[in-house]
Length: 331
Image (tube, rainbow, N blue to C red; front, side):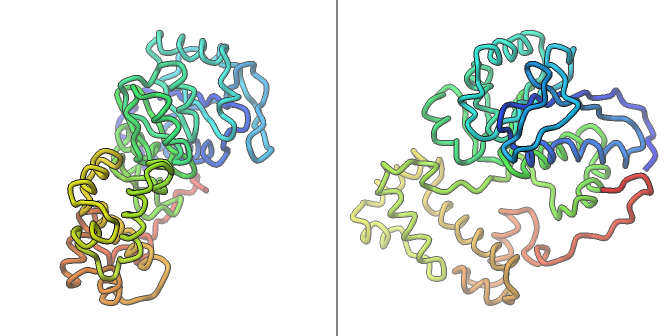
């Protein structure tokens, strides 16, 4: 694809912390490389950095060269903090001071996987929406009440960019690419990486309920477990209240306080998640999945599914559209 307009180059720096997640870093860098290839211009430039300029060992035992010192990075558009295991040990006074200097300069700040903890410790996510790997959600919420913790796969709040772990940085970068280079380029990049759908900041990462609310809220956990055990024949809220020894009002307050939703919505999303798993992992007909997940009819199921995921259930089983790659854009 030939560019019609030469855009200003965006420069990103990825600051690696000890035991960072290399899969998160790769899923952030590779879309930028592919966007350059597909768009036919150097729209993005990136560098790997550490505090002292020495290569940092990732959680998988590997390191990346060349690595530059953060102080040599100049004024990039965004510095992404790449976290992983034992992130608390990696957050030092030197790191916090460096992050605060970047913020004072107006540099955009991002975080991959657990890197958000470093920004939180520096006070640079206060009153911002932010996300982190689901294993760290509860701890971050308890330790930093001024941050609006989200369970989305990624968040963008002004010049703060946070992505949860695994492949979520890919979704963040695809959305940034779409903003800069257009939806066509973003779609072509996603197809090169065999991504069937570009997730938005409205998509939620899977967060086990115990990680969201903690083990101390046994009443809420009991209600959720009852819902999970009765997907095919959904129980009424009155029946759930009777089975758990709670009142309907108590259940509604628990869901509102800890999950910010009503029980009916949580139950519906639980059933839709189960339906998506069956669509992707089995050959069950959609009619059977409709019944297995407690929906009244295929049209009703399709309507709910489209509203939740943005497309009908039949799309889940369609192969990604075949794309002829450009000669200079190998994966």
